[in-house]
Amino acid sequence: MILNAVALISIICGLFFMIVGAIGLLRLPDFYTRAHASGKCDTLGEGLMLLGFILYEGATLVSVKLLVLIIFIFVSSPTAVHALVNEAYARGVRPWQKGEERR
Amino acid sequence: MAFPGFHRSSAVLRMGATFVILLAFWLILSGYLDLFHVCAGIICCAIVAFISSDLLFRPDRPVRASVRSFVRFLIYIPRLMASILVANLDVAYRILHPRMPVDPGIVTFETGFSDGVARTAFANAMTLTPGTITVDVNGNRYVVHALMKEHSERELLVEREMEQAFAGIFREER
Image: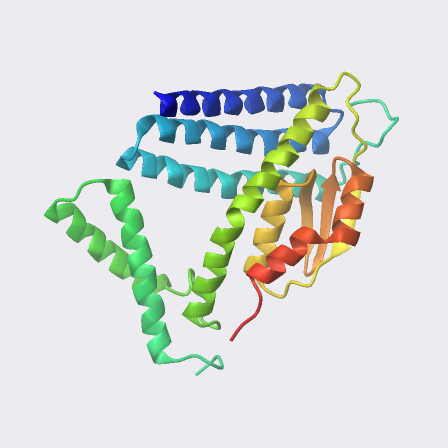
């Protein structure tokens, strides 16, 4: 019962960060800052949601698979964001600075 | 032998360790514990461990040093998670704030890592934690995009807390 409550809280926190990531994607001014929103918030959001699933599921093989999934996301998500940002930087996308109009 | 400190026994040890890790991974993912599936797993893992044992454990470093680095990294994970949480709350605050107080910019700085794994782990952690995204790594020169330029400049150029933590985890030992 308590474990289910903790799982639910974890999933809701994860959802909160996912939604914030989506809002950031719309609100922030340029490509690089949007990468911040999607890279950070999505990673933690997914991690918290999967953690909630693990707590809900209990000590089974599915939980172990979900744990492996969390590790994979924490490695792959920053790598994907880095690949995107690196390519944009190499192509000469200029970072937005304070005071400029948003793009 | 090509590398100093390269011994036949450590090559066998590397293969054995790789085999154990791969087999554990196989058992987790397959979930079937009957004779056929476990035997298939043993055969596959043995072939992969034989061919590519130098991918998990580097041949120019003793297996024990790799394992120690890994254990130190595991111990560091809770602290990393805490700083990821703080960084995320900070980004969430800036996104949801009506005036969006962001002042982004590019920060360039140097680190003292000589090891590729350490550089990668540090770049990865940098993307997740203190309001920065790793844009480019060239040798020891890191180019990062910071959401709050001044704040990150102070953190990366003056305090260097995370760099020291990673240097401690992946310190060179023979």
